[in-house]
Length: 216
Length: 70
Image (cartoon, rainbow over all chains, first blue to last red; front, side):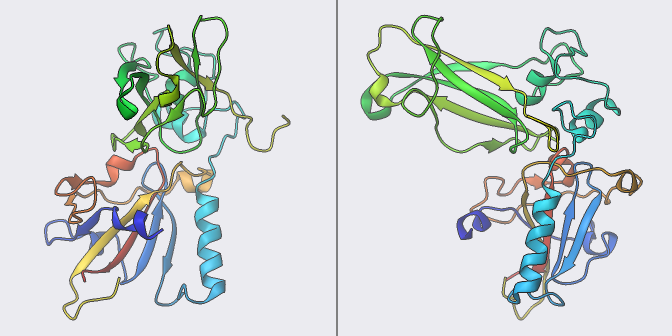
């Protein structure tokens, strides 16, 4: 927790920005905003000291509730992603709204634009050298957070595909791109023990999550 | 976040919490918070010295803590 806290942006308000005034802030306010920067909840840590369990638990519960994606049409695509791109809930996981060959589930999972045929999921193969050995790695965009689900697999013959940490793992952290559409960059690679295989292929697949509240 | 003797106003951008929240019909009527651009002052942050705006976190949940510079 302390480590995460230390790498967060610290913003100094200015007379030009006047955030405290324009956001009607009191000292020690906590403000959570939604996907469209609308206020979701506001708390004050002076009046609600987190040293007292009831306030700590209340704020924790509110944050966890705020982080649950809504999917009112139960199609597996979060409402805010659909509303953010199209202003309605008409896209489905298999629809291809921009006609670029990538369906909406793939565009969502891999952080490309579902409204531009010029934007499709892209994957950059690279050679990693853990411990001096050469293994295959792949860098690609994905949607930040846990609403999107994907699986990365490797194969030596393009027929049998395997996943799991002995085959491929995420190296490093998910790097938020702060691009205003929830884009992040991630890297997967083979473990060093996979070096010297005669051939290897790698792929990433988008998986449709079971919408909350629906039957599996 | 111990306040310094000189109470300099500062906002701490807590984080993108991961994913966006429910947009209930009532919430959909709420006006977005006014936008701003401020410079990241944290030398340990990957965005150090860059400008940060709520627009950067669109389609994500984000949280702000308003404390005092220490």
